[in-house]
Image (cartoon, rainbow, N blue to C red; front, side, top):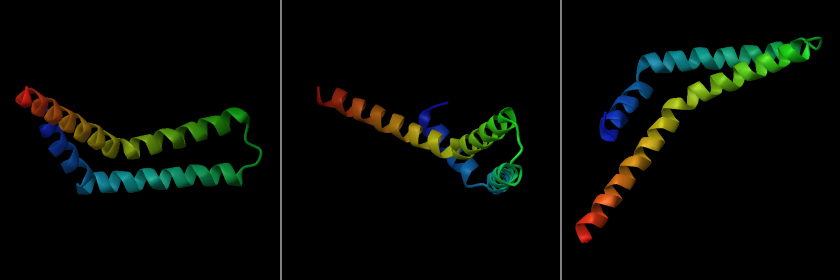
Amino acid sequence: MKPEQAIKAIDSLRNGKGWAYLKSVMQDEIIRAAYQLADNPNMTEKEVDFRRGAMWASRQLIDLPDKLFARLEGEVALNSAKADIKETN
């Protein structure tokens, strides 16, 4: 898939109702995990690490479309700049 096509696909995904719903569910789960950390002072270190890791992974997933979109925009800009340089030479 060309970067321009991928940008359109990612933009469609991140602006869709399905993604909005999935994102709100993930954000609720992150908050729930944070409350569990706060409400249970007797958690083992492994449990704390697991919950923190789950929250981190969820946040990364929530941010994935925006990060991918930005990367693709950069790739398109770079390709455009390379094409401009070739035209001037």
